[in-house]
Image (cartoon, rainbow, N blue to C red; front, side, top):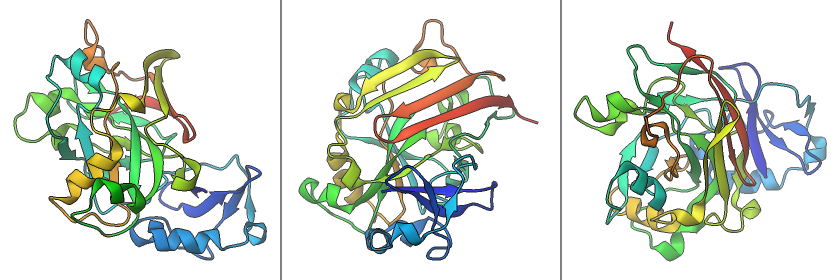
Length: 281
């Protein structure tokens, strides 16, 4: 299944994309998609609904973020071998874990706002994982079974806030609009192998990131098992699994986003995003 949220910003409704590509309204069954509403048990209920009985919605309508909110928005740093190399960093021995504020969650086609006083706003295409049940201390063999689905994430980052201001990376990751997710939450039955997906990001029509999830240093099952040793994962948690090479800070000279830039972000089988960059006002 492909689950979506549609409608005006802050007034979205839950829906799904039917097998013919049509948009259907699920708001008679769910108030919105977040937390337990995207648990594995909730997805089973959706699978048992006859989509032919759901109201049709024009596909021209705006699609919002695929989740309204999340208990946690975890991220993995330096998780692609070639990305670690372009930054001059040694590949980590364990996953580097940090968080984005959930207030950064944004729609896949909404404008990205350069924060006030920003000098180094950057892009990062990432495969997103949505956790489907409460769990802790799980093994790698169990890890993929707790996933509700996958989505496209653009992990927008302000590098000066991230690296030059001390403290935690979360400061550079969490401005409003810095977490476009969607357009779809794609359930696991449609993704046979998450380590076999191509992903790319275009900036103003030019491909700057083009890679494959097989280049991950730590695969998804290892990431989930690792996280679960330190914290309890919850239904609706988002995990951004790292970005490949081609980010602005790794270019020579470094290149950062400016007003008027357009990003197109795509992952195989998961859909695409498109965002215009605007100045803070």
